Image (cartoon, rainbow, N blue to C red; front, side):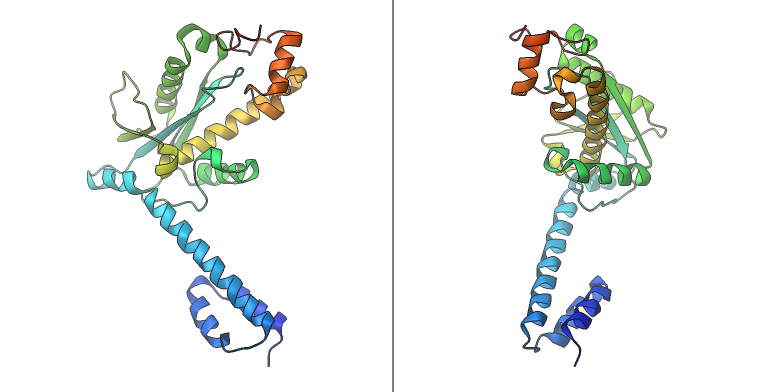
Length: 253
């Protein structure tokens, strides 16, 4: 009879398609260690099934576009509309047809570590991707929405491959001659938009970490420009720095 350790190794060596067979093989084993291995395997299988189902749902809008004969779809999203400092950053991503990347989701629902892993995967898999931004001066001059739309258009124009359709989180880009679809909560519902949100978030976070080295008193590495208590207190103590959005901090200065 195999030891618990040997059975555990056997389970680990079996691919996804062999799990049902190996569970059947050991399900009559009364040892508690074997039962725990089977229970954990069943839980892991259920998690994978649920993740697969979630990812399938995130291709709903992409597949509607495929039915129209369009395969070069650019997902577009922004990060940084709400902070008191730093730019608004947008990304555009064209993924291969029917692309599923395990773990991809709205960037706000992911840990920093997971976002960074996924961002590298997305960049390697993407047909094309681009990142664009507008700084605080532009945001103050034309307002955050217009700055966001301008950055989105720049991101689309910077793609090395021209998309056939744009999938955008919640807005529509004016003055662009590409068909577009605005999807409410698109970063939760579209694989392409979620991929763009992840790339944009990592790019903006990295930039704010660099800004922290230049303006350490505002703790940008911690708050990435958002209005945390320590950030607001620093603005009141030291005044604004060059990357603060003057139109956003009127109440604190």
